[in-house]
Length: 84
Image (tube, rainbow, N blue to C red; front, side, top):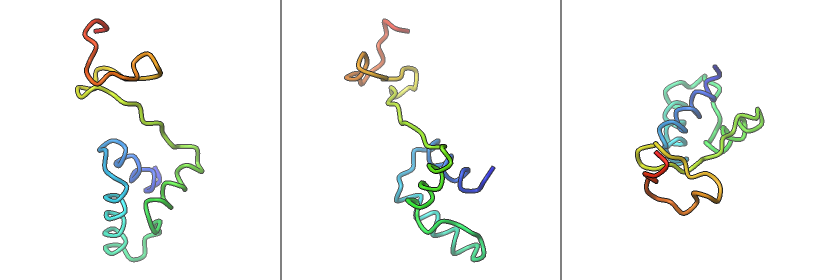
């Protein structure tokens, strides 16, 4: 797997902010001077998007047991126990 894809996967799975990812990228560039890394999170994200590997964030309950997808569940903030 491409290092940029792994880096982006970590961001998505751990819910880190774009600013945090740019700071980590700066740290990696300082530690590994000869590594070919994007200059910012924005540039790295554009590289991933050009490959067609972007994602759509779908809201979920705090327990991750229910997704709030489309209009039917749009206003929910808690689990709907009738659907469990």
